[in-house]
Amino acid sequence: MNDTDVVTAWRHLLAQHATIVCALERELHDKHDLGVSEFEVLDRMSEGDCKSPDGKFRVQELAECVHLSQSALSRLIARLERDGLVTRALCQADRRGIFVTLTEKGRLACDEARPTHRAVLGEHL
Amino acid sequence: MNDTDVVTAWRHLLAQHATIVCALERELHDKHDLGVSEFEVLDRMSEGDCKSPDGKFRVQELAECVHLSQSALSRLIARLERDGLVTRALCQADRRGIFVTLTEKGRLACDEARPTHRAVLGEHL
DNA sequence: ATGCATTCAATGCACAAGCATTTAATGCGT
DNA sequence: ACGCATTAAATGCTTGTGCATTGAATGCAT
Image (tube, rainbow over all chains, first blue to last red):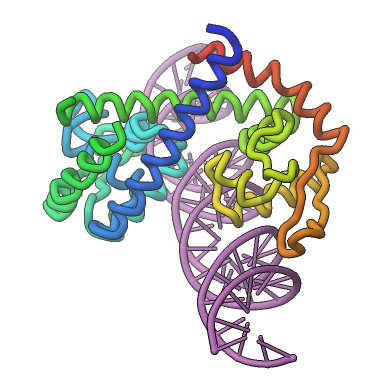
């Protein structure tokens, strides 16, 4: 793969990313009052992905899942908690860590938003 | 393409994007004191891409090129101008618009950074 | 047991991005 | 010629992000 091809591929990736993120942001925000990253986190949690061996969610792991920094995810979780979509609970085993859990409201919001999410992706992929 | 495949493809795209942007940001910043968007704009200009029919660069067109909003690009251009990499000049034909031009310093900076940029892309694509 | 390095999450801070608005210039219709 | 809608770019404002730091808890070595 020569330089020109690499650059072409990269620009294609950038364009796709920009288009889709932008479309998702609009749709998810308008119809479900959710940001892309917010939905991504909820979606991962509802799948039981990024789970600790003990079965709950740690900030660190969720962060890697959605390609955000630890601090960004800390604040994102704070927003989700403020909106009642997740709860933060102390982890007794290691009291430095916290467990993040989907609330019923959170699971519901995610389930409602998922079709929109999938539809937008379907249009563009 | 079913839902699962679409989501898999999307997550792959997100992961690639995050990894590459992150790597580019680090390398370009450390070695050339440039951000990813900054380089992208300089690179496009050095190619003569995103050009007006009359042969100069308008903010609007550059913005579309690099998938940024008009306001974001306005400020980006301001930063590049502050650093002496581009100049803004009034457009006599339509004095609402401005022409953005690469300076010699800008062209040089871009030429120096390009190998780094291509190398990072090569590693990840 | 005590000290020290390490780890997890939260926070202060700086900065880039988008939206909405503003300012200036243009073109069009009457 | 005048007003009015339109367009280009800049700017005020808010928000999300990352880096660096902090604070608390842990584990390990002595």
